[in-house]
Length: 51
Image (cartoon, rainbow, N blue to C red; front, side, top):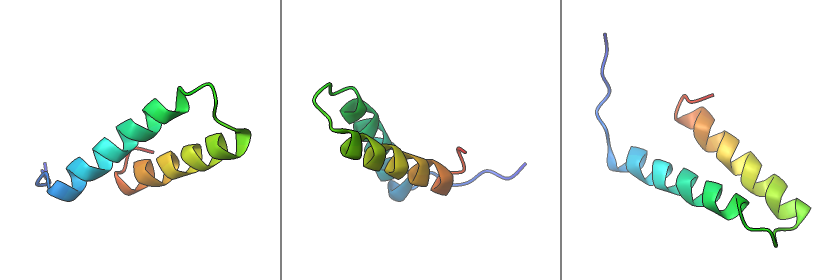
């Protein structure tokens, strides 16, 4: 089993992902903003091997 060190970059990406998830809850988001946020979340999840 290979364990990866947890880095500042990992933490930063997790916090960014949480912030984006929170923004998605905003009822005043336009469709374009919602699409951009969702895409950014997918990109982060892919980088973090969460996809």
